[in-house]
Image (cartoon, rainbow, N blue to C red):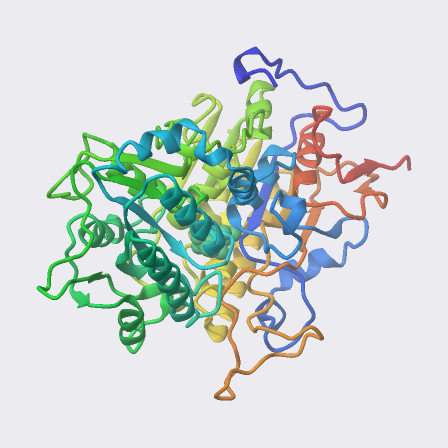
Length: 558
Ligand SMILES: O=C(O)[C@@H](CO)OP(=O)(O)O
Ligand SMILES: [Mn+2]
Ligand SMILES: [Mn+2]
């Protein structure tokens, strides 16, 4: 495909649907459809607005696929996530996503032929190779098997001294599973040591407390990681990472383990990052690596005191931000998500407002626009970020900023300044990830109330709404066996599911502006999130580009 500059962005008029309607596009984060039982927080919560939309089935409410191949993930067992979900929603096509691209590059060995690997390998002779990233098999941000292959590949290609800086998960995988992942990694590193390499875990910490913040919500998170990874300083020092994780888990869960460094017999950190080293951030997913990438790459940087800014060769597993070209070196080329619906609509006169609170702000902007930061056209777009609460787990504040997002969206709709008002309502997902069932019920109710505010505004202005979600989470809070029964752990306790799910998500259309006869087609039974972009373009009065996934709607002649 030609680069954006050479593409004609002119969209054809829809033969039946008018232009000029105000449209609210509402994405409920982590809101799937699942059987109604006590672990389905959406079912347990009072959600009258979302319930009422369901009554529009099958013409104005249906389910769409939000996981696996439908969003470009390697297998049908891969749960959906915000990045791939919003990419699909915004781009209208299914791109092979980071997880898959890295798999392919590792399987073919092409990863080692690329510029990025060549660049870092120039440090192998004299320096240390540091690998920093999320340690689990969740497949949302990273995958253990990819790390294992990379360790093997790098060691076969000259890396002599390797340090791994682990971030424990418990969010895309069960809490407590980090112990096993660290043990597995330790075994792998021991095997490398048997071959004469000097390979060790150097530092660690829980992903939500160390390093993996996003959208600049809390730089302290990145600083804690920096101190451990680069400076070799942390409040907790251990000789061994398995011991570290076991001990620190006494007071925190995997997501929130405090930072630790591994020290030698003289209490000296075994793997600070120093001049001449190579660093690879092994996550393929962008949002929670961008901040660290900036700290590692930018000469001018004032977000926290780095104390030392080592001269390193740094590469991302992928390039995380296509607009900022960050990082400038990377091992695998990211999916080329071009010609997103946002870019088309702006070129066709659709004025857009997008809003969420910080922790999801990039979802309806950066991810929506194909992992591209910034506006396409600042005259036509306004993106508003509502500051998220900082330093808390969201089960203590399950309403989050849902109301504020609802208000901002309402005001934007009523202002008449925008044709599309797009929001992400985070509650089901962010609170669902805490595993706190009661709080997640409160979260779902708050999300429903925010939807109501937006639909009321749409009602007032004679507009149209499209309400959907990016993947499941709050609709199922327990791990289950194949027949759907909740699983207990060896102590007889319920195994709480903090992760996303593979469930489909709802999509509803309606509002006074929806032309009579508009209904969901019955011939797209496998429709997924990527079909939503063409649908929204139709509702704005345009036909989607040919190569977009087909629209979900038709206009019946009444
Ligand atoms: O918090 C995150 O990073 C992921 C889970 O790993 O959730 P989401 O995809 O909804 O952003
Ligand atoms: Mn999400
Ligand atoms: Mn999530």
